Every structure is written in C-alpha cells, then in structure tokens.
Length: 150
Image (cartoon, rainbow, N blue to C red; front, side, top):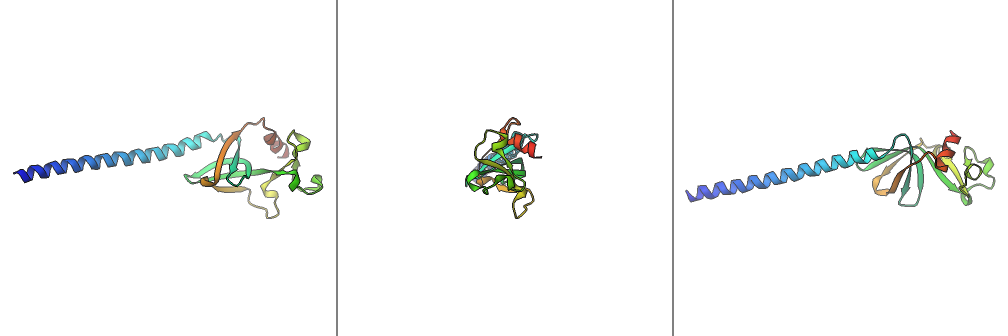
C-alpha cells in the first residue's frame, strides 16, 4: 500500500513538471512568433529603409522579412564617396551626383543595378550582419535624390 501511494506521488510530480515544460515551450514559441510579426510591423512599406551592415556598408531600399534569420532589400541604392568616383562624375552612367541636388557633399547615389555585373536589384541579408536599419522619411535628401532619379 505504501508503494502504491509513493508511486502516485511520483506520477503527480511528473505530471506537474511535464505541464510546466509544456507551458514554457508554448511561451517560447509565442514569443518567437510575436517577435517576427512585431519586426515586420516596424517596417513601413510605404517608405524606403536604410540598412547598415557590420562591414560599414550602407544601403537604401525597400526592406522586408523573409524569415527570422533573413531580410531582403529591394530597389537598392548606395552612396559612393567622391574619392571612389571616376574623375568625371557627369560621365558616370546612371549615377546621380548628390552634390548637384542636395547638401550631401562628396557623394553620388548609385543604383545597385548600375554595377557592371548588373545584379538583380535586391540583396538578401543575414540578420546577423545587420547592425541597424530604420525607416527613412521622404524628406531625406537621399530619398529625394532616389525619387528624382526614378
């Protein structure tokens, strides 16, 4: 009889710990799903975003979430410093010199598809390589240059 009572107590304890484990797993799954949706909700689809990578590169484009580890940037532009430009910026094919259209000194706006390799115009990024991203207001000089160029 004592053995039976002890066995029932162990079953009750096991059920309790299994219940706690299931609740914790449910909470973790819920947090992951909410984080994914919250991240997407922060991206304003009507605006351009800027993305800063760990290697210091900065891109402008339309950002969206592929999955919890991957982002995609479409309609991509980047700023090229004056030192990196050819000697005659007016002869650069498809580039808009921002010094002519704004107060951004020594920078030229380049569309990703204007590179010699002619990429598809989107970049797939690992979230691990993204330092930060933010929505950019339409009043930004860079966004004004993008709209002028389109």
